[in-house]
Image (cartoon, rainbow, N blue to C red; front, side, top):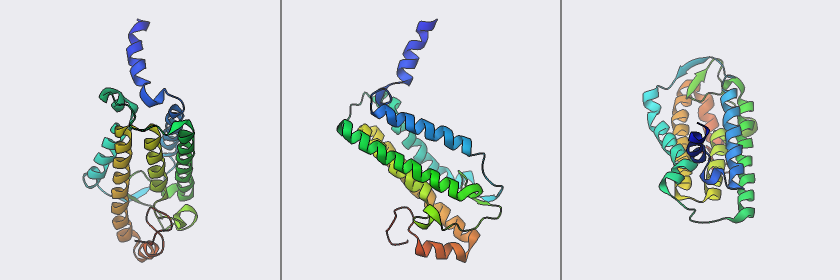
Length: 207
């Protein structure tokens, strides 16, 4: 019966996804996710990768953060925002989120077929140190962390902010694992790259 779907749809589209202007953030992230999944088919042949067991810890952080980040968690917990940035504040944070997402796509396109969602060594892999990779070694993580934190602040619930923090920590953990792997695989070229370009935050000393 048509009426049976109403409770499901009202739950699926609830919380900050239905309140303007935070619903704009939900639309932005859904578009980014769909485009990112679609672009995942544009990737080169993998020569070697880090095992799932080794990466499970940072995956757990990102998944847990993602669950907390969703509006459904806030709905289940009966949360209300602990602060309200105001409509202007949300629009400003939306621009910051878009800047972060744009940075991820710049990095993704610049990296080309060397990109992978996992920690891998692609065929013909080499150090890329131009474009966004001349600013930070992990620009995709930089953009995502910026966007997630800006969204969490705009939404203003404890679960959204905590989710954004956990996702950010998971990405930072993944970046460190990636550093070790790439230093082993790419050798002195990657070590030299690490010594001259910051890891995630631009303009900081390399380390």
